[in-house]
Length: 340
Image (tube, rainbow, N blue to C red; front, side, top):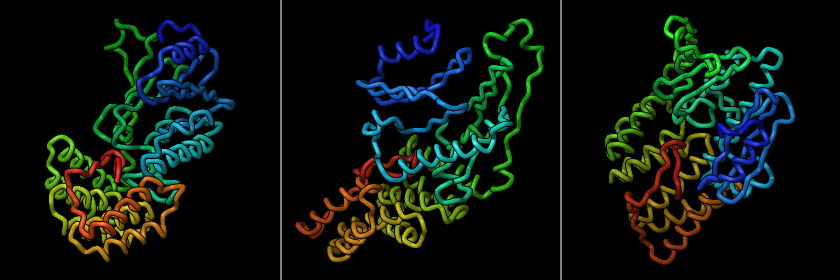
């Protein structure tokens, strides 16, 4: 990419060197005033170039050519990336005419769920705990602002640094650079912020230490601090199953039936059916599965519907279907499942 002299040469490099897996790069040429998303699979490329004075990109393919390459692994992941895209567009439009570094940081730090119209710690928000670093580039002034603190990184201070063409080794240590504090969310929504921190701690206990029991204990604090966030309760239930505590899992899934987030309500109902089937309560299992199929939207919940139909047929045939916690594949970054 360093050998590219202009926008089109950079696109040609992407066409020549496709990734092993799906990916989207954001390509910008300040001198040519051109910007685009380069959507890639190992076989295809699609360039979505900005036609107006702004551009946004989250974690899904947008061009017609690439839409059928989206994984759509589960409803919450799909809704999350579309919600972040929607919210980014909204905030760019709000900042038109006075858009600068502070406005860019405000977007990256945003915790508003545009689907449910509420402030949230986890789910459908721009500022997520999985972002490794966050950068605002200001080429007009030869500088950038970098956040590299603890997760969520985009809620930590942004430190000013010179762009490479402005960097002067002799002056660097004597120059003064701005540090833009970025702590409003922690002050205005301390419980939501603390709940997310506990979720990160639980995620570490499970993914790094392979200790689902410890993870469920930590998650109980997330649920206490943010009781309406169904994602925390759902993950608690799955990790309880992986820890061999079916009673605690059942309690968590039952709690989610009283919450408003439809996807987690349906997914919790499904796992209640799996629990009943594992205990040999085939009638209750079938009722749970049928409730999922009755309410689930086929356009939104295809993976869950497929799993529910399979489980329903197994129960009809076998009556009792053991639920092995070790077989559950959870996707902790989005608080959902890789497969159901």
